[in-house]
Image (cartoon, rainbow, N blue to C red; front, side, top):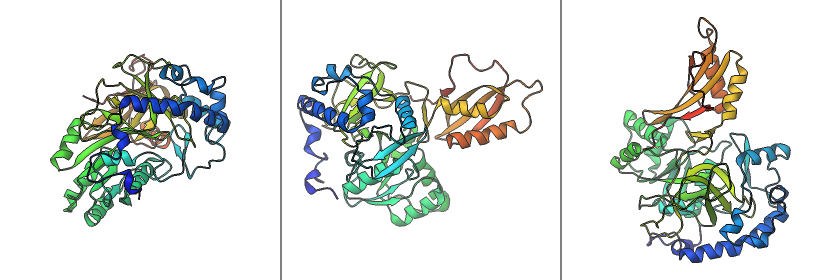
Length: 422
């Protein structure tokens, strides 16, 4: 349970920090930043190397912060490979409570504390309240998704059913018995559980609020949940940073979480873009255990020139608008171009390949097109063998379609996101 002064169930705000004057919040963040950087550089040798030559005392404004290099996921992965498991980016003397492994591969630490990922604030904004039973269908295996929302809900005073992924029939049966008011998971999976409940004749109508992440909440799917009486909101979270921003009942944009400095930069650079321009989300956290500074998420968004109608005054962004690179999130898991290359290397018959992410029946689906130059067509069994490699490498299933040499576009893409985000 969080201390009683952290929330008031009779108000719509988690705490008074959410309604501070924006200038006051900005000034407070940049008062804290130089000291935070100084401690982080002294405690995390990987970060010290990355910020070599930086004088923390000079980083007192957005202009000063913009002079620092952006830390890309690829750099973090290279540092971890050279100096496992965290590449020197975890503060010495602050052993993590858990260690996770996400696709890439990249290791992520869980810091100490009741709500280390900052999820309680987002859950409160979504309508979760102390005493709620929460059915959590995020994965608890290897990746931190399940724990991010689990710990946030527990900090809020909720009771958690750690359902994890899969087994929709069992999950529907448990939901009918436990009668949870709240649900957490990827956008598609709640529909799978509810449809299974209808098929089995089970009453799962207790769910009234849901927090989803790990993929896009398409308008048609949100409408279906609304018709079922469920208020669904999204949070924007990463395994490295935790919950960065979250939707509120106002239904307009996503509000930046407290204790982050967010920048929107031109993809491939560290240069902030003009207000309202789409660019890459770059985040500086104040996590003393895992102090990521100007961390490039690879996700695209833009800052909205307004405040949320809900009354929260922190920066409002448009939400997820695609990837700055070809790294693509599918069913809550990232798929990288390097993984497509790994599949091709396993099968000498393949010339080029292109992984296409689409939607069917309100779910993400994958198809891998492979160019095969074998005269009479693809060898027998090749498509099945490649499909096995696709599942093994990406942990996601999909259809494999052999095509003629030269039929794939010569545009450098190996992952195509064909989902309609309108």
